[in-house]
Length: 45
Image 1 (tube, rainbow, N blue to C red):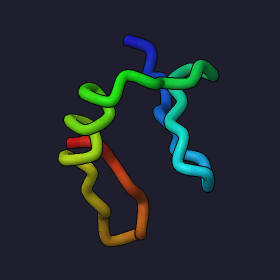
Image 2 (image 1 turned 90 degrees about the horizontal axis):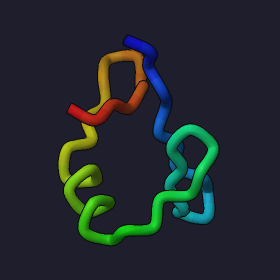
Image 3 (image 1 turned 60 degrees about the vertical axis):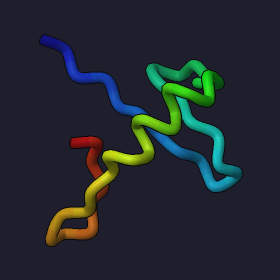
Image 4 (image 1 turned 90 degrees about the vertical axis):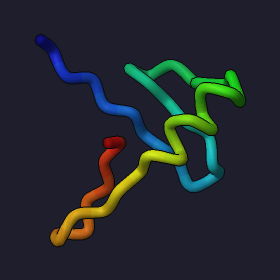
């Protein structure tokens, strides 16, 4: 399975595979599951 990154830019816009994500309901679910590891990397769990 190929892994595609979700990125959040400084302006707060979310991107998946280079395309902007704009559906608020999906972004709210993803944002509620962001975690930071011991190396200061962020993941959606």
